[in-house]
Length: 132
Picture 1 (tube, rainbow, N blue to C red):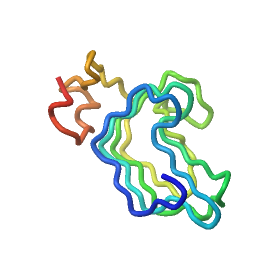
Picture 2: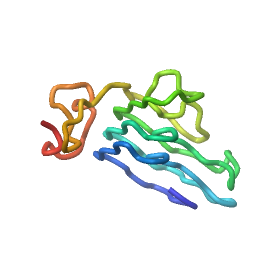
Picture 3: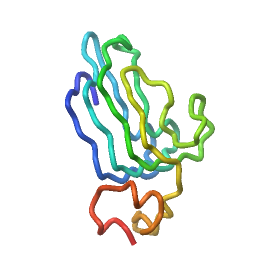
Picture 4: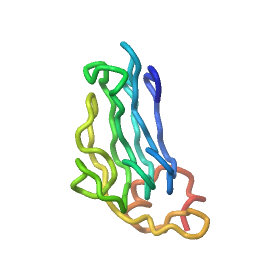
């Protein structure tokens, strides 16, 4: 979300094996992502970076506010600083509230569907057709 995305909702998606950051809060100048909710997603196995991160290089950290990352299932195989739980969701991001996220394997099938009855399936708010 760049350079000044506000009041967004990212809900019920599957992000699997993204090459860079799956969900990136960013800003430029006086603008920054604000009041955006990321909820009910499965975010797994980003190849190079965090699954969820904030880039503050072009905007002051104080410009970010009201963002919420909650009730997602996330997992990474990377060793990342500031990620003690292995979720790939960066622990310290400016203007961000984290709650109810879990670290679990979604047990994807060959079609990138989530195994029903798992902890990830319980968090996922997308279409039931994305479970098996």
